[in-house]
Length: 75
Image 1 (cartoon, rainbow, N blue to C red):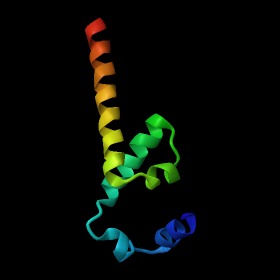
Image 2 (cartoon, rainbow, N blue to C red):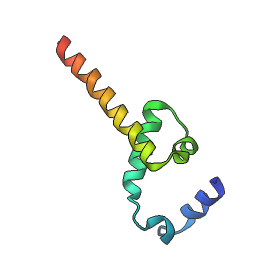
Image 3 (cartoon, rainbow, N blue to C red):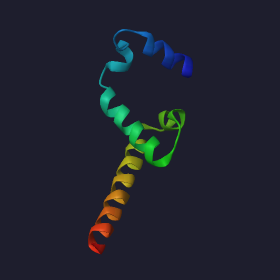
């Protein structure tokens, strides 16, 4: 898998297969968000089904919002 990723990154513009219907900026943000907060590797995150990855993103957002609300309540 990493060899394929390197092949994609070597191109000046995205490979057509990967750019059709895929929001690459959104994908990068999802991967960064989950990796940053959950410390999962790029490979682990890319192995997730798109729907499953988005479920984790939403769960993490909900958790962060709950924690922020609790902090605001204590102030």
